[in-house]
Image (cartoon, rainbow, N blue to C red; front, side):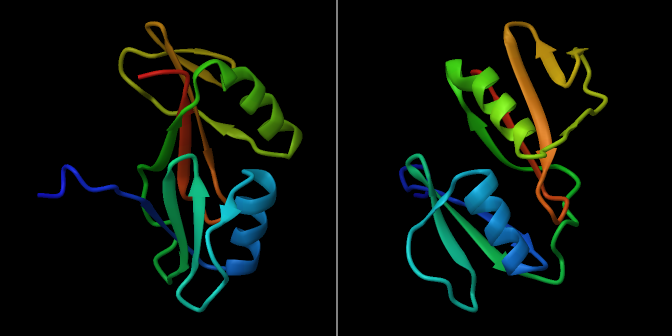
Length: 126
């Protein structure tokens, strides 16, 4: 049924202007269409991410959006740091930390938040 259909992330935000700046300028997302009152659709790789206004923005305490970035892990991390992104640490069983990077066997990952507190993450591989 849905297992063979494409899926996209849906991210609630409080202030569309602030979110637009973060997702376009900080993360480098490209709009898939115009802005409207229902939100903005962005392209991220082969996926779609809808950023939309909601009074419930930032209430999710779990990861809302993640990427597998392969060998670009260190480059992306450095680029985000240069744009003022700070990385979060969580108590994750079986994980050791090297600075801001969670080490889980041969997988490494980082977590950060958008301006509304939505938790985003990327890993080098799955």
